[in-house]
Amino acid sequence: MDRNISEQEQVRREALAKIREMGIDPYPAEEYPVTHTADQITGTYKEDDEGYEAVCLAGRLMMKRIMGKASFAELQDASGRIQIYISRDDIAPGEDKSLYNTLFKKLLDIGDHIGVKGHVFKTRMGETTVHVTELTLLSKSLRPLPIVKTDAEGNVYDAFSDPEQRYRMRYVDMVVNDGVKRTFVQRSQIYTSMRQYLNDRGYLEVETPILQPLYGGAAARPFKTHHNTLDMTLYLRIANELYLKRLIVGGMDGVYEFSKDFRNEGMSRFHNPEFTQIELYVAYKDYEWMMNLVEEMLEKVALDLHGTTAVSVGEHVIDFKRPWKRYTMYEAIEHFTGTDVSQMDEEAMLAFARKCGVDADTTMGRGKLIDEIFGEKCEHQLIQPTFITDYPVEMSPLAKKHREHEGLVERFEGIVNAKEICNAFTELNDPIDQRARFEEQLELGKRGDDEAMVLDEDFLRALEYGMPPTAGLGIGMDRLAMIMTNSESIQDVLFFPQMKPEAEQSAPEEASTEN
Image (cartoon, rainbow, N blue to C red; front, side, top):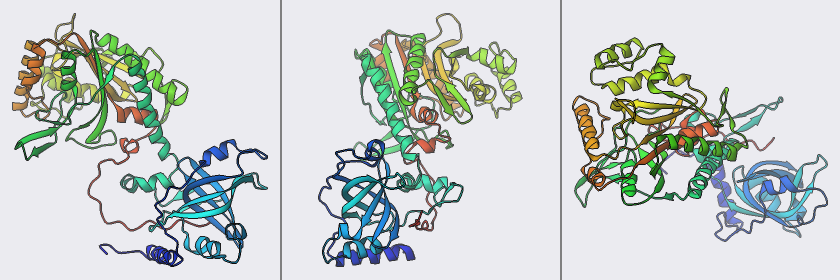
């Protein structure tokens, strides 16, 4: 053994050996013929209903209360919990009482997977229950689940509330903590809702490379790897933007992708180095049109998940009903600071940033300084869905210059609950202007900005073949899921978030066999 086995684990291993001695396979291979789930029965059964005389369920044993010749227990499947009633004489007819006396009473533990067949009835207390006539062990659990206790006031306590343990051992978290599974079901429903909306409009879902010879489409530091056969450096994508635009050049009118992206940056409750976003590009549209699409699509998502546009998020109720409030970037800064920064040069902007409490230095260009000022003074005050529009050109090397205002680009970000959830442009399709913007980014890189974009010659070549006017959008799916599921941390909406190397931990305490 490469680890210490706890006393409780050793007891379970001994039980496993005794089960095998009884001639019972603790890990059978054949299909188990499930006919019902727990919620199907508890949600629909009424006394004297027909169709419940022979049901078959499978799940984890989560509680057992031994009462001599008969016992009550709880079975938990993917849908929820249901009470089961087991009588010695019903599951062990004839002389052999070992199935009840030995297997169920002594050798089955909390966490074991079992299958039960029987009929449904209601107890004198009115609880829907399955009267078991056949019991099968489907998988023996060798590690005890954490203790779950309920005090006299009904407050629930368990030994598995530490966030780090929960994120590392999501498989246990999902078993013992109510609501965890529901969060991830809702996350999946968000994807379904968005796919329906986009597919109904004729846009095509596509896939683009994760391993890229050049990283691009965002200002971020990449993860780097090496391909042995080609003997070349590759990067995990930070965005899929430049590949999707190539498809627009190729003649597709609307494409989107739910993409796994990777950024070698800091971690927080709003940032994970591996994250998911959807990017959408539609030909012959602009950012004003895209703002309307975002409003309509996210209003639909809220309605599909909650039946209302008003979503509870922490202490706030956030209403996704259209239309959303709109500020330009300069208007927002002036509104929240009382200072018009639109005419400031880089030196004046640096001084104002420091006055605002930004940790600013000379490696930052004017655009990054504006971004930091907005983050420090404005973003945290934007709770209800808000569009920030018309960014300075320095902040947006892939966006088209504003059709009316010099020095700005046609870009918006959607801010909800004080965090950016989406970013969109009228896309830059002038290859000469795009080359100049890339070259400006190279200069920022030389000044020490490790998030500056690189110059992508193949993408420029694609633009030179002609990209039609295009609107582009990126939505952070993890942050959107946090809002739509009322989750405090990005780790709460990721099955397996990135974690530091695991320290040695003691095993959780065994679950109680009593209520």
